Image (cartoon, rainbow, N blue to C red; front, side, top):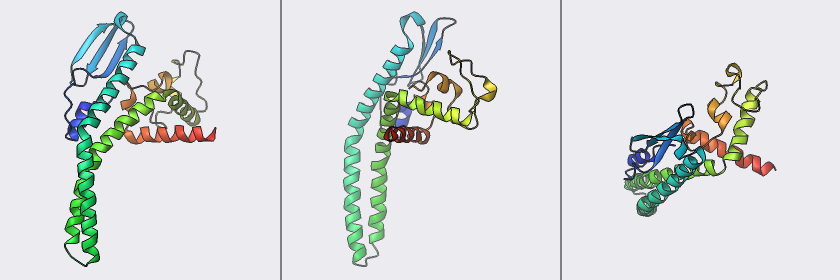
Length: 213
């Protein structure tokens, strides 16, 4: 998944458990080991017998929950404070504008400044919530991905093992989903192949499909 330690830092939010949170993993079944990468950049290798994909997926989901909780705790005051200040500046600026005061512009500019300070951490929280939603509804999300790939490549034939799809017919240029995601499904380990705009689009398609049922 995304490195939310870095994402939070870009929004002036400090999270100090980077050595704890699992960013990604890579399973090597031929040599029976798993390569782990944490959000502080540290990597580790463990025996495949010590874990499983299901356990790693659950660990990532639990980590995302903890990150979401920590981000909420550290941004709630900032969002509330800057939102209140922004609203107050809008009221003052609007009042001055109705009175014909040239100074209204300055108040409205400051309102926009404080509003942006409230929106940035709020956007981070929504991005984390979106990743969690995609994972929690991955079966429905995978159906949408499958439908879209088949629509773009109607002659694509998938075998029972689903990993023998001929490379020359996969519509790489037509869909944003990598072939591995199409074959094995979306999860927090590969979700960062898609940007937030693409993930939001997936969510809308899932909800639209649900409404049609």
